[in-house]
Image: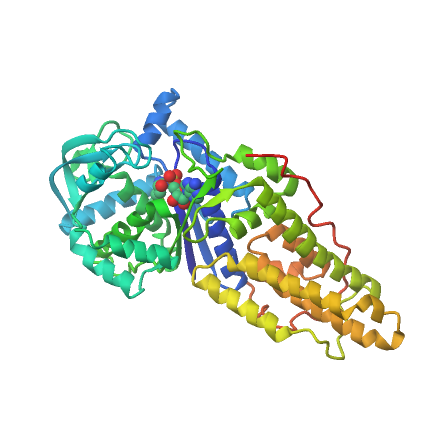
Length: 521
Ligand code: MSP
């Protein structure tokens, strides 16, 4: 059982590359687990109740709910276009979510984990969060994110007893019960626990009827972060889906790690006093940022790589190739990654067209030409290092389980390169000229297609459509698709699993050569 979540995105604006990236990572992981015979639930959606969403609706003269629904549909469509197979797309303005948040906040009020008090501090309106005095001073009393002045605010509000849970959460991170990856982010967050952790405000004064009122305090609205974090819980808290709990992978950007590493587990610990089944998330993957020409992307700079920008490329190379690029060259670990058209061109031409596409084509052509159009029976042994392939495949699988989702593209390609090198060195096109060497040719071809099938298993979560075309050509598409839907009877990751005798079809050109680097971003 695997529950995977993406952040729940603000709908003040349209989706951009960062949102696509986090969501594609979640999809890649979910597909990987489905391929491994596990049932999965992928959640994505939108964070509707933020103040900045309200401001955007006002600025555009739109009714807030119409605005939120309109923008949410942009996210929904973008993720669908990028082949993300989500099980649920939540909007925090939905009735069922609002109802559940009200219940959970009520539980926390009753247990004393939420209590009334007064707060005074520096507020960052863009981030919807208070900034500590030290931080405010450090950033010259301006938002470290959008550089706008921080606002001094004093107000009655409800507080969440974060300080009661911080020590426990810190220990859970230290002993890796809550895994934070990459390791550098785990260390970074542990260093932050050295600061004194105070209780946090978890409500604000109502300024409109947008948001979720705090039960018993009708003039207070639930703080948007508490509202949004609880969507991970409200979504699967149904009789049908509760068994997916807890989240196995939570994908987030580095900007929101603190909320997920401290506030979120603390809320869950507080709620678990009443709801005993509420275990903690297992692994939080906190990736870095896509940047543009070396600069951070931001609304104020107006330099986000939009869907329209990406379309300039995907119209030529297709969505699967873009997914591959995002996963293979993205800000997967602790450094940011520059979106660069030359790099995209290089990835497309060299890794996809010349390496993977070419290898698929070579192998299928050999089967069609030398093996009577069917997967050959290999009666003799070739010199293919099948143990090495299995080592790479198994290592990649373990890497993914530990959060290194990008092992799928890098290790998948590694196996493809081995196949290309093997064909090159064993020269089946020369051997075939001597009829007595036919068993050897068949052995070379079988081992090549089998290794390529194993590579395709690593690559499918990243490029589902292109890989399905390859499966179609080698006659295993139907079986693979029913298997992925849950009919999981045999281990597809075993060497020699491909039966001989299957009739093979011609393969369409997977990655036609394209010149794309002329398009700049
Ligand atoms: N609504 C909150 C999240 C609540 S989760 C309970 C939020 N939304 S957001 O719309 O601002 O999306 C933030 C997320 O988008 C980041 O955490 C990250 O996953 C993704 N990205 C936004 N900009 C990004 C880049 N430039 N690069 C990569 N991903 C980034 O925060």
